[in-house]
Image 1 (cartoon, rainbow, N blue to C red):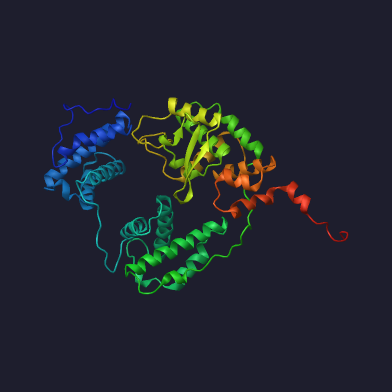
Image 2: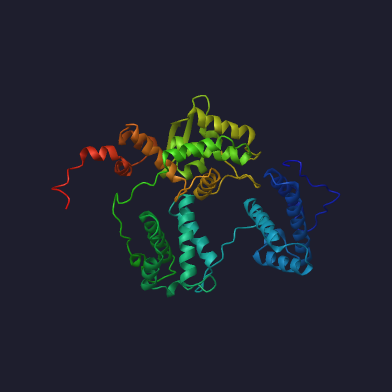
Length: 414
């Protein structure tokens, strides 16, 4: 139920400092598509929290993390409900109160001994405000730094000034993802150097540790694109024709965008309703480097998107094209959500592959175009490569073309 989950005044008599904000917050919850049961659980927890704040003499603008912890301890003693659900409800209402200016965003001062989450909040703010990086890049860097700091110092007693160059070198040597691509290891080193420049800029460290992060050895054009076989792509798309649930309609449209247009996972996440021009049959893609490119919308892709919008997309104020299949009905979070959708779709179709990520469908499109005689320049235009070097690697899978230029083996084999 969407808008049907409305509170009844006879059952909820809200008291305490959150009473003036309860009605708009209830409207906010109902608009996010929660079921009636979830809606009632969240509103009861917030109502109880408001009464507890009133008994403690805490004003709405003074709510902090210590008050939430105090309420959770008191609730656990009374055995009202599971603390995990209560914590999620309190996190949600705190975010709403901050967004509406009722309470300020926490920005605690840091001293010699740091707390991991505080450092990461400062670092994320630096990346966004001072460096102007995209949200996806900030999330990637923050994840790398969280793992590094937790491994080096631990989350509770974080002494940045005690980190030495040998610690950084040893960490990279031990944790560089050897079983993944060169780019993944390079991204880890880039994130570490970025963090150390931030720490030096804020005087959290006294030496330039960015220079101690070692480079990762790699060679241009060393890897071969891992493309899904053409027959597996056909089997996957044929199997998706039978999916009729809301999530199934969404997943089929996503698979077609990957296989027909070669979109990147993050480009699909960023698509909004306004990016589709139905009259012109075109799609506006938000690519790398904040570039926008119009692309033609094939008939089967447009039909799948239309079916999802008509029968699968839940009601939501979010303008993202593809939404979560369960409340809250927000947009998909990151490229990993798309990869998980592809992974589950491959397993559901009974296809056995060693690699099940989303990017292999993009590689499969490039290999298919190459087999049909398209030039590398044309392939690069379809895939929106910014450099010809990114397209040249597909020449390594053009076996017929390679046979034409291969030199004969000198002499006879022994």
